[in-house]
Length: 101
Image (cartoon, rainbow, N blue to C red; front, side, top):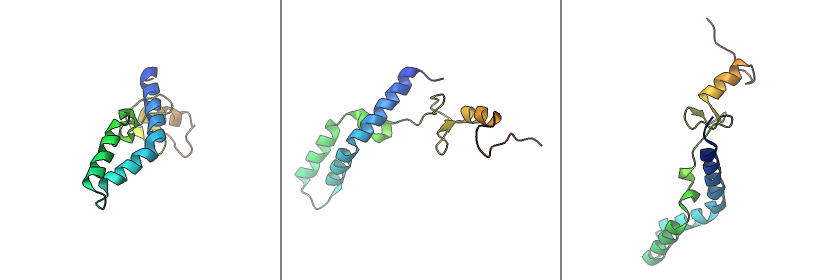
């Protein structure tokens, strides 16, 4: 099980990324638009830099829903490899059976 503080920190980052996503997208589009003057583009970049760092979606870490483990994460299932194996052994993942040969 991961530290509760790191899980909560990541949840805060998810919340901030969702909260600022529209504003961030608008400023990014403005700063990349070649039709806009250089001063306005530079101003948009400065405003983008003033936003909280944790509002960037790149800072959100994929974590296991069960254990909070940050590594060995399967996006499709939102589980780590260890949690997936445990749930698979108990027969709680549909279609997954323990291999034997």
